[in-house]
Image (cartoon, rainbow, N blue to C red; front, side, top):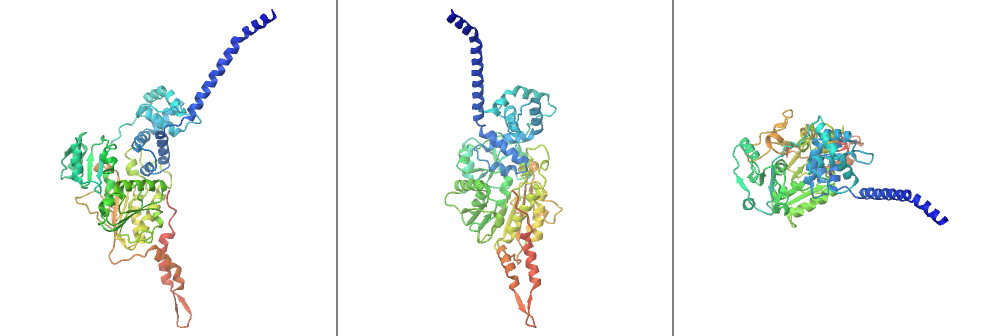
Length: 511
């Protein structure tokens, strides 16, 4: 009986015990599931896009930051970032309203995931915690969008697709024929520029045409995706905006000459310069960022061939001299900039809005230092081209004006193209009419600024080394006076010190 009683008591308590054990097992399973979710990483494309948005928010250039990302689908990252930038205010509103964020959910990553879910591919990959949380809030997010007073911006005006023919690997006529054989239809290029812009903007899905100004550039409709075309994959065709092709073309180095690309990475303009040189001569390609530098090396090897005229240098161009790159005759400077000529294509706000205080001035100071260095450190240089993909006067005409005020041995000359280009720089500057400006709306390209500077005949400019040496030795340059004493040539010393001030009063390089 006692045994039976014990058994009865056991049976009476056992349902509670099993219930507790079941609850414990569920908690363990849920905990393990949550742990697995935490262990699963967010797909790299989402993390890379969030990283890009953070840096752009801090004032970094969209173009420069994008090229620093090590990911095979840069186009996908760019597209996702554009949508997030355009709808930033709406994203902020619906994320706050739905309570999506918690203390461990990065708000920028949340914007990326919501953008992809609502206006991108309409799905999210992976099973990480941020992805799972976003999917759990999908219904509430969509409802919040419908009820929001802020409209969705998905009317991104896609620019024309420009593709440069790599004449080191293929011919222009041969490439055009290959595209025709692939099913593309070549349209005639009008002789009138305004008519050309209209015709280019109305290209059909399978049509293309030659550019008005550049013989080796072809134009395709906005929706055409050439990334996986065999000619693009092997480097025969290069995806490069028309405006970005203008600086190298206007530098116009002759085959056999010595050229310096001061801010060369990622290497598209370097490749174009090698084309213009026909791989004959010497082309110094310099960049100080290791990641961008090694990407440039890969691009140069692929696009210019293993036996090319390019010498790559991992160095800071602000400190380059003729000893590092001897005999330089032509210099291209396309420095880091705000990227406002590209960013304003996708940003609904003014490009200057949201830029950290002092960022623009920091960029301008750095750009000026580069230009002054190019004008003074290379005694054999004949022509310099300075360009930016910026819309801001502070990075364009102001930089050129300040450099010219410090170094009087150069002047801005009119750009020489085969066909006319009417858009010029600000009339507020005496050289403004000699600067070329590409307008996003009127030229259907990225916003761009280009100034061509040439050395004034008969006016020499001391190199950095020569000026430093003279400054060091100026106190030794003494002459005996009539009384047998010594007299320092103060006038000469003042003159040398004034010249050296060019280098002493510059701020640290922009980052």
